[in-house]
Image (cartoon, rainbow, N blue to C red; front, top):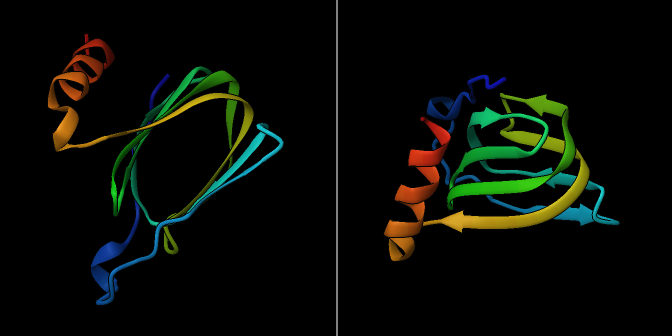
Amino acid sequence: MSQYYETNSTAKTNVQEHDVIMRSRRLLDITGVKQVESFDNEEFLLDTVMGFLAIKGQNLQMKNLDVDKGVVSIKGKIFDLVYLDDQHGDKAKGFFSKLFR
């Protein structure tokens, strides 16, 4: 169900850029991904240079993963993109507690 991938961020000395590009609500290209924490066909949890990014949808699949460049491509029907940061600590805790039950 879930897998763990980590990018090679120690080889880079510059801060990596983070972009999210969505096409027709069916394809996401995301840069600046440090690691893929978990994923299944309804949810992805990515650790990015700008914080944790939760992606929810239907029939989600990892189309491309380039760990050296920190690029992830996801296809499927996208419902929700949410950054889980310190300002929403309770929400993030709830998300993580549901995720790791």
